[in-house]
Amino acid sequence: MSKWIDISQRLDNNMVVWPGDTPFSYKVSWGMEESGSVNVGEIRMSAHTGTHIDAPFHFDNDGKRVIDLDINLYIGPATVIHLPISRSIRVEDFQGYNIEGTTRLLIYTGVWKDRSVFPDSIPHIDPGVAAYLAEQGVQLIGLDLPSVDPIESKELTAHHELTSHGLHILEGLVLDNIAPGAYELAALPLPLVEGDGSPVRAVLRKKE
Ligand SMILES: N[C@@H](CC(=O)c1ccccc1NC=O)C(=O)O
Ligand SMILES: [Zn+2]
Ligand SMILES: [Zn+2]
Image (cartoon, rainbow, N blue to C red; front, side, top):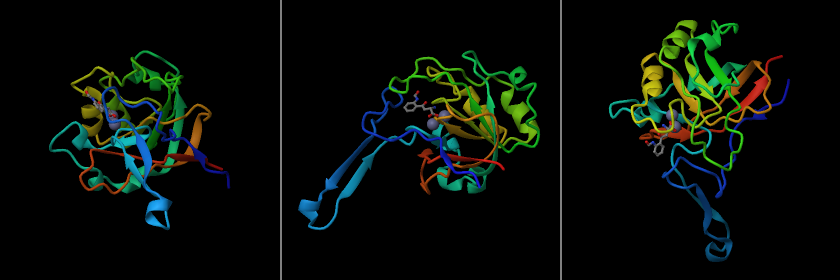
């Protein structure tokens, strides 16, 4: 059996987050000295920090919360493809890949090179891609980018289109050292009852 590979961003107090969003912070709020026995940490973060999933409630007041999402989509066979492009991701870009029957599709763009700076422009998912991928059987799309829409977008067209075609969104992956191919994925959200998103520990294992 090959080993599990971590494809998650590390969570530390210096990491970059969406412009204007809650900075990530971990601190020991109840230390050994005070408690007499243990260190107890406190985490403060946005649900859209680092490697995370979106729940439809993020962009739709009537949308599903994290607890309502089917956990089966976040574990299982996944295909990694490389689309090293800085323009938008279009239906044509998937020609030449056999993704038919792929439930979980992870896309490496390699565009977000310097992780110490939040990108001011990213390739977004073009209209039409959601319908095409849904037709191929894709139910989860993951990218090495902080969003599937342009950073400045307020309409979040791709988020809405993907969701209306039954595709679940996984963002902020680290796919730098991952060759294209067939893998197993695990990227489970936390059981956040009201969550609009959730951090995940995303891992991949090469299929034998
Ligand atoms: N759509 C992005 C997050 C996002 O749009 C956002 C995150 C935190 C604070 C503001 C945001 N968007 C504001 O227009 C995401 O899916 O993670
Ligand atoms: Zn998000
Ligand atoms: Zn998103």
